[in-house]
Length: 215
Image (spheres, rainbow, N blue to C red):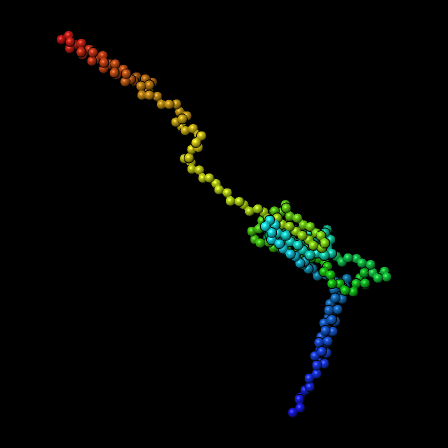
C-alpha cells in the first residue's frame, strides 16, 4: 500500500529558517524602538553584589556610564534599607558627516535612564551612620555600612543594705568608751557609790566591836 504522505527533510529546515527570520525581525523592531531618542527610557534597578563581613556590609552596584554627581545614596534607619538612586544619561557622540547623534544612533542596547535600587538589611542590625562610605570607580559603586559593636556582657556586684565597708567606722567606734559603774554612779547626783557603802559598813562593824569589848 503506497504511503499517504512523503517525508522530506527540507521542510523542517525551512520552518526553522522562517522562525529565525521572524525572531530577527522582532528583535530589530524592538531595538529600533528603544533607540528612538524621543522615547523615555524605562526606570531600572542596577545589579548589586552584597557582602556580609564581620565588621560591615559592603554593597557593590554596577552603574557603567553614570556620573558620580548623578548618584545618591541614602540609608533609612527606620526600615534598615539602603537606597541607591540616580540617572544615567546617554553620552553625546559626534554624528557622521555632521549629522545629529539622534540620527546616527541605530542600535541602543546600553541601559540608560533613571534607576533605583533598595537593599533591605536584616532586622535588628545596627549601623554606625557616621561611618558609612561610598566610592565610585570604573563604573562600580562601592558602599560600606559599618556595623555597630554589640554590647559586651558586664557583671554588677550586688551589695546588701546591711553590708558595711571594711574602712567604714561603726557607731560604737564613733562614740566614747562607756564609763565604769563607779564612775557612772559618781556622775549621777544623789547616788551612792559602792566604795561609800563599803566604808559605812566597815565603820559600823568597828563601832559594834568596841561596844562588845566595853561591856
